[in-house]
Image 1 (tube, rainbow, N blue to C red):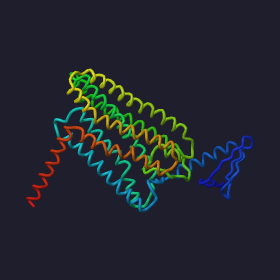
Image 2: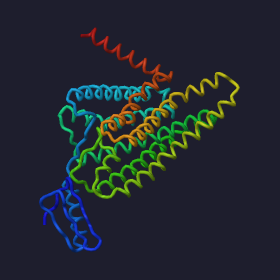
Image 3: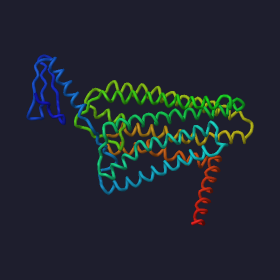
Amino acid sequence: MYVCSEKEKTEIQEENDSVSTCTTDPTHFIVLSPHLSIRFINDIEFRNQSIISEFILLGMSEDRDLQHFVFSLFLIMYLVTVFGNLLIVLAVSSDFHLHTPMYFFLSNLSFTDICVSTTTIPKMLVNIQAQNQTITYIGCLSQIFFVTVFGGFENFLLAVMAYDRYAAICHPLRYTVIMNFCFCGQLILLSLFINMVNALLHSLMILHLSFCTNLEIPQFFCELTQVLKIACSSTLINNILIYFLTCILGGIPVAGIIFSYTRIISSVLRMSSTGGKYKAFSTCGSHLSVVSLFYGTSVGVYFSSAFTNSPRKIAAASVMYIVVPQMMNPFIYSLRNRDIKVRLKKIFDSIHFMSFFQLINY
């Protein structure tokens, strides 16, 4: 028997005689037994799945000149993201006055942003530089796993940070009791564990899929939904799992954020002091900006992907939620938060002093 060409393979199964044939290849096979037909097709799917070693990431553009621009742009964005978020982590960890729940969660958010960007951008930069669009099967699964983990973890972190602001504004006298160090650590670990289980489920489900010769992913990284679209086998269970877990793991944090800010606004409006109102809203301003950017870009990309079939447009839209929020978060917090600005100024002053001191000694 000969396995028909997978590139343009068609299967015709008639109810009475159960005939399967390949119509676009000069060689073909005919199986008269329904049981043999099913077993043969399953054998084809098994062999298709077993020989998959890599996928092709179409990226942002095939134009060589434009690729140089894309490489430079993404390299700058990646360096800004890593450097900016590292400064936030350094500022929080080096100042005892910033060892509070709010800044503890902020440093975790910055670390998560670094992880999201590092999971996707470096591979794209390497591919552009090497003029190679491939990514290994294991590498693709790894990207799906870590993007799902850190993307979901950031979603949970935003909800935890909203609850922290709710406890600080609505229950100021009990704040230190409610948001104690042990409870904050438990929230972080629980959020990370839930999203690791979620990512592991999706990764294991992909292992059961078979792929034909269409291995082109219209993205600059392995996105779960795009990988499912190129699978030969049924992805019904995968899609049901995605929608179900997205509704649960995405809906609960959003509901928590809405609840927290509803109570915060209600509490602030009852304040008699104008200064108290301003201080309360100023502490929430940075977080609200980050929340708006995170969910706004995610919703925008979802709808733009639903109404376009252009691979390049889909890849360009994905930049808005996988790169831009992670790059902008440090600027939002450093520009709107006085404590962070003061600490960053001290860090830069110390760096300048050390550079000047080394220059004198030299």
